[in-house]
Length: 151
Image (cartoon, rainbow, N blue to C red):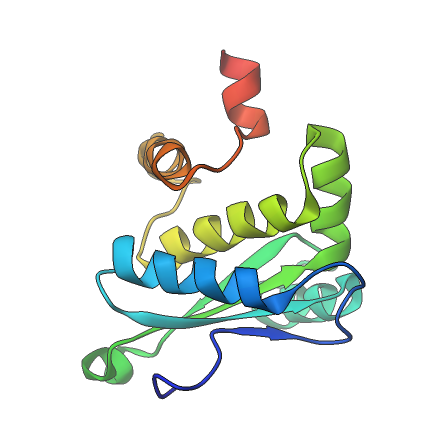
C-alpha cells in the first residue's frame, strides 16, 4: 500500500457514512497509535464478515471486526495488516450504546489496530482493554460497554 492509497475502503457505501472523516481517523491512528505502520480497513456487511470469520477462524457467524496481521515477511515494508468491519454490527452496537455509527466504526477500527499490533484481549489479563480505554480517552471516543459496566 503506497501512501497515496486510501486506508479506508467501503463496499456498497452505507448512506450517511462518509469515508473522508474515517480516512482522517485512520491516518490519526497510524500517526499516534501504530508508530507510522500502515494498515487498511474495509467497511462491509455482515455477509462478508461471516464469510471471513468462517474461512479464517472457523466460526460460522458475523462479527463486528476482524484483524489480519501482515505476513512476517512483510515486516520490513511498514505494513501492519488489514481490518474488516461490519457496518450492520457497528450500527446495532451504536444504537445499543447511544452513540453514532461513525463513532462505533472508529472504536472498532482502534480495536482492530490494537489486535494488529499483537494485543489479544482473550489472553492478556486486561492489558488490551486498558490500552483501548486509554486510547479512547486520548482520541475522544465514547466509552465502551465494558467501561460503562465496570464504572
